[in-house]
Image (cartoon, rainbow, N blue to C red; front, side, top):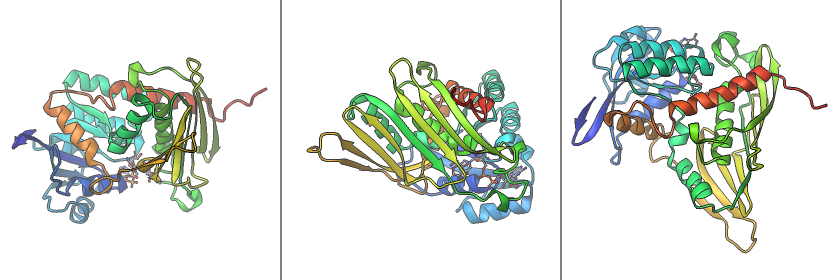
Length: 355
Ligand SMILES: NC(=O)C1=CN([C@@H]2O[C@H](COP(=O)(O)OP(=O)(O)OC[C@H]3O[C@@H](n4cnc5c(N)ncnc54)[C@H](OP(=O)(O)O)[C@@H]3O)[C@@H](O)[C@H]2O)C=CC1
Ligand SMILES: O=C1OC[C@@H](O)[C@H](O)[C@H]1O
């Protein structure tokens, strides 16, 4: 990592050339006047060099990355500062461990790993090597999310929070997907909870409790999953905080598409409605007060460029330049907490019917 006019420069090695890597890289290569860091796409690792070259041509803008027909070559490249992992969940742990063993910093897509135990292994390795590691929970880094949480928890604009609802539904025809799809193959970590339910759960946790990681309250969790062909096609979670009576109703499904207004946070004085293309991409929220005379407030905050992946990338660069190994918005303990909750939900599986 180096500096240019006080801005940290981060050289990224990209692992995998699928959908998410295309979104991430497309955002990274757009110039931004107010960027707090400079991001260089230094290397691309793919299952084939040809695929890597086509990817760079299509999404890499003016970047001239080294193209490798393997991931190992990216980990070994001395010009790479940080590895971005954009491959199916089941391979996250190994990719993280390999990158860390080469003393690379790591930004790894969500879900960080398949379970809490795998994540702990990765964080232990990162601690030993003294490298930065973070789960790429980009939604938490969007200005809209930060503004919304400030309004709810600090300013208490809707009074005391009572409930949070969030749904992430993507209508998918499982039969039309090849057996090898990461969205269908249980061996690749398929299922709605790990893929999209993680966002519903995240909105629930953030909306119901100001604290994260070790500062968070521990909720009781009730859940049910509908399993088909070995994966959860629908998951419903109820979080109940016995400490204050708050509840979250958080769902994910591949049987229905969620409404653009995908979440709401209810308080004693009003409700916040959150909307966007999906719970991962919030674009606007509206505060509606119980007092009918009070005018509703609309906050529009689409990202300045692309989809908004640069917010998390800038945060990562600023942590690394400051010598930090974890990020305060998505610290290791928060990743572990979310994974532990999802472990419990998956262990409970179909759930228990009430007597
Ligand atoms: N933050 C967000 O909004 C999003 C995050 N994600 C996360 O990113 C990760 C990847 O998802 P996505 O990009 O949609 O997946 P894709 O299937 O589109 O791409 C995954 C890429 O991983 C590589 N790969 C390595 N092994 C396999 C394998 N056995 N099967 C399939 N691909 C393999 C391939 O790249 P190559 O051939 O080049 O090596 C492939 O193109 C997931 O963990 C997902 O949860 C996904 C979408 C959005
Ligand atoms: O994180 C995600 O959000 C968008 C979806 O397209 C994708 O499947 C999921 O991984």
